[in-house]
Length: 254
Image 1 (cartoon, rainbow, N blue to C red):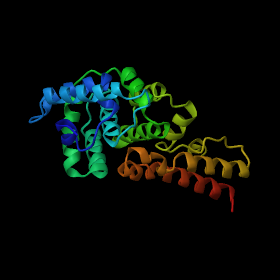
Image 2 (image 1 turned 90 degrees about the horizontal axis):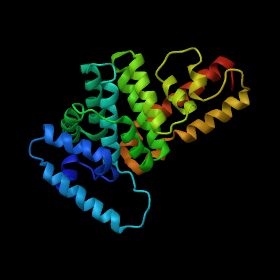
Image 3 (image 1 turned 90 degrees about the vertical axis):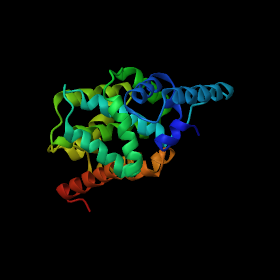
């Protein structure tokens, strides 16, 4: 593992190349002391050489890839309303501390300070992510982005528009997007939206929907990107359980 990936705290896979790799290189050159862009370029070249020698298969997403993807997409959402909100920045920092610990989070946030200065092509970044990241991991990205937007207590229209655009580019279906969105809104039918059902369905359909959603959002589905992200996914899983409990109480389902 090269100098840059050691500094980051996790090995990188697909994010070493493409538009995401260019953003990382810019961020290193902008804000990080002690890590040279030339070191990163050498790391990229070595990675690309090894990739060319391998059979054409989907590259495995690593914990570091997910981390970099989070940082870049978080910067898009934070800047979407034309200002950089300190509350949202603090949310990102605390989230990364909870995920990775203080030392790695501090390093990631240094990189983030460079990323947030750069104009980013959301579409190009999302294309690269969706080509290499599982559907479950992409759903987790959307959940995290809503958490950032809601950090100051309110999701603005521009923030929601940015997240929806990202979701579309990541090939997240409308019903999956609305399910995650409902986890952050206190609407009367939020529990039904979370379970991806209508209010007029039968009790049996409610139970069936819960089992389906519990399976879809189970933290174990994120095993490929590290134990730390499985822990973070529990919040989303708990929203599914809470929605089901609310509907059971409302309908007096045993």
